[in-house]
Image (cartoon, rainbow, N blue to C red):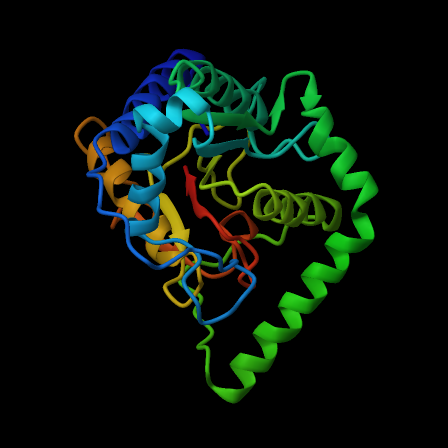
Amino acid sequence: LAMKQSYCALSCLVVVVLVATIVTNAESTSITNIIHALTGSVFFADSTTEKTLKKTYAEATSETKRKKDTAKVRVLIVPGHDAEFSGTAYTDTSELALNLALGEQLYALLKKESFLDVTLSQTAQGYDPVLLSYFADNRDDILAFVAKQKGLMEKYIGTGEIERVVNIEHNAAPTEAAIRLYGINQWANEHGIDIVIHIHFNDYPGRSKNARGKYSGFAVYVPERQYSNAKGSKSVARSIEKRLAMLYPQSNLPKESTGLVEDQELIALGSNNTLDGAGMLIE
């Protein structure tokens, strides 16, 4: 982890500028006759693409639509970990603290854009009350949703219709943390979230909390290409990665050096095809 609070604040401003630039520089496209009504829980069907995102942006910035407040680009910011599962640490600074500081600044700046509808999953005071209630009230539904998607995933891997791909090994999330992450995916699906941004800071197994890390740089994780939300996710994440690379080195952790990393296992990205919108995890 080995990063100071000032570095976190600077990183926040960079990410904010990048995300805002991605959205505001998106080229508008002509209206097509294809109505986007698929969900990420449907295998083998695109749930988000560059074209659908540009169409959403065009509608959100249309003067007519804006006056009626009928269309916005919906963004969910998810600072990684929580008070119960706080992630890694460096001396007396926790990863959660850095994630929250970055997330809150990102939220504050993006909220200034009238065409964006921005939600922050948690602050230093805890989870957004709406999400907290959702986790409790819909626990059985979340578990059923996950079981269904995992069952389908295993079925399609068994028939050869989907290839199991493991680019980087990850630590398994604790059960309760995993349920919350899947719950965020299900909530995002139900509320038509267009872009989900997870924020984390790098670490690796075996590092003492008092020792500086031997790896540095950033990586942007995106859903593996067989997932329904892969196309839209990659179109946004690629632009963010290119702009971050102008100011920061790409990760020197093995297999992250490409800057943009496809992943099939991270729940934040829609593991088992559980997320509709464009999803990315920035570390």
